[in-house]
Length: 268
Ligand SMILES: NC(=O)c1ccc[n+]([C@@H]2O[C@H](COP(=O)([O-])OP(=O)(O)OC[C@H]3O[C@@H](n4cnc5c(N)ncnc54)[C@H](O)[C@@H]3O)[C@@H](O)[C@H]2O)c1
Image (cartoon, rainbow, N blue to C red; front, top):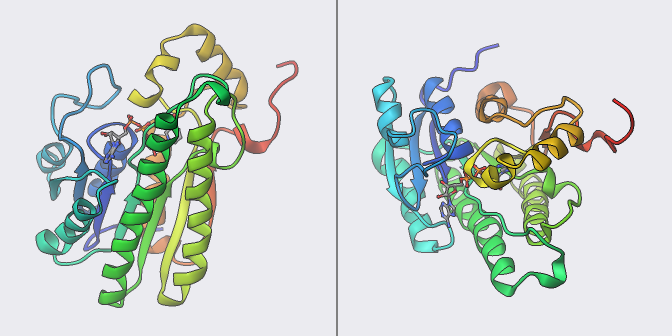
């Protein structure tokens, strides 16, 4: 099996830190040219990024790959148009979109959450994914050579979790948009799939990660008994971006150590 991405051009949203950064680095390591989109080039303090002092596009270049950074708030349609357009401007085409940018809200039961919590999740995860997919689809259709959209959903899009209702609601929307696009654009050889990770060691989950109670919860919720690593997820993104995944469309693939296989309670 060849997972070469030579000649392919990918856009990754939210790629300055966390999972998006890991995916951008992994795609570039396989030969893809990468457009890194995010609010800022900065990695965030206290995160778990490899070589956190170096911006993603610079790190790709240091490792011999090709990448450009473009500022993009995915909730702003004009900025998203600019981000997708950058692929053609910088590298001549677009083959892959990774909808990764995300925020999390929750921490309590739903009646105590605010409209801001709802809006934050909906705007970034719902509208942001919609905007980027729409612009990428236009580019793919104009090229006429297919394409691959990879939505970074979560097990939160496949099931309920306690105390994160706005996040789970928006993630379920991303999951179902994945299915709709798979149906509508398969005819154009544009594949749309979702990756659904469990709890990952990134800045997003930092508060939970530093609490021993939460750590214990994750270890028991995940049958493989550990948090997910960015690299566990990035390898699937590489595969879905590659031609080896040419007949995979509309799949929502858990990368979750078995979290969604069923209830993990009971004696270990
Ligand atoms: N961390 C987890 O446990 C986990 C589990 C499953 C799925 N996910 C999903 O993975 C994706 C990446 O999460 P992460 O854990 O790396 O989070 P993170 O907080 O470490 O990184 C998120 C990135 O998205 C960027 N971002 C936020 N709002 C944006 C906006 N409006 N426009 C552009 N970029 C924006 C941030 O600047 C940051 O670089 C998200 O969609 C998240 O929901 C995370």
